[in-house]
Image (cartoon, rainbow over all chains, first blue to last red; front, side, top):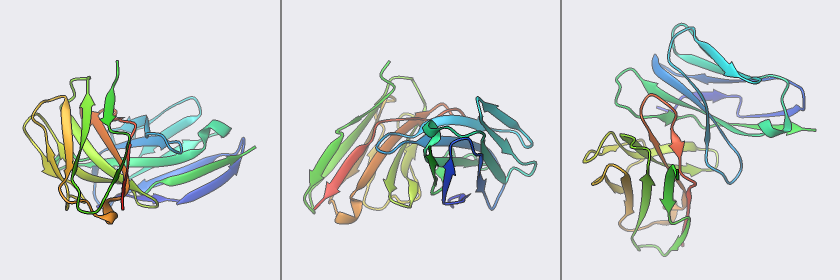
Amino acid sequence: QQPVQSPQAVILREGEDAVINCSSSKALYSVHWYRQKHGEAPVFLMILLKGGEQKGHDKISASFNEKKQQSSLYLTASQLSYSGTYFCGTEWWDRDDKIIFGKGTRLHILP
Amino acid sequence: NAGVTQTPKFRVLKTGQSMTLLCAQDMNHEYMYWYRQDPGMGLRLIHYSVGEGTTAKGEVPDGYNVSRLKKQNFLLGLESAAPSQTSVYFCASTESPTEAFFGQGTRLTVV
């Protein structure tokens, strides 16, 4: 089943921070994060594989909790270019190699 | 390096007509996926393939068929199009569990 993303939508002013959550009812093998601009294809941000892992680049980072059932994406000091829809994609431990995406979180940054 | 290429980019079909969407990737990836994207629903997996000659059902497979005769190509067929299949279709490829690369999408309208 689809992972649950929250919130569904966020409106921020430039420079503010945001957190997007992705939750699963069972342990995950991996979590992917993507950003999609209107009318474009999703673009990869990062993937997390290990419980307790944290990674990031620039001012966008993500964590994967110890039980591997929740991941959070952190956007720090948001920029106008961060606007878009963010998706988490999940793979389960049964390793049937499906990537199932959440419904997305719409992020709008105001100047 | 073209990455993932989808053909066509736009198409209008009449109810009951058939068509095939082509996805081609030049990265020698084993895994390929077809998703549909509808407002508020995120990316839903239709069918996927873990290698040449293999296919498997995703979350919403009804009304679609697929084939993976060559490693680089993944075809999505609609035998008898219905208005409910109006959507944006994305193909993706990956060498799991790494970054998934998406095509630019096919906007399909069934009237």
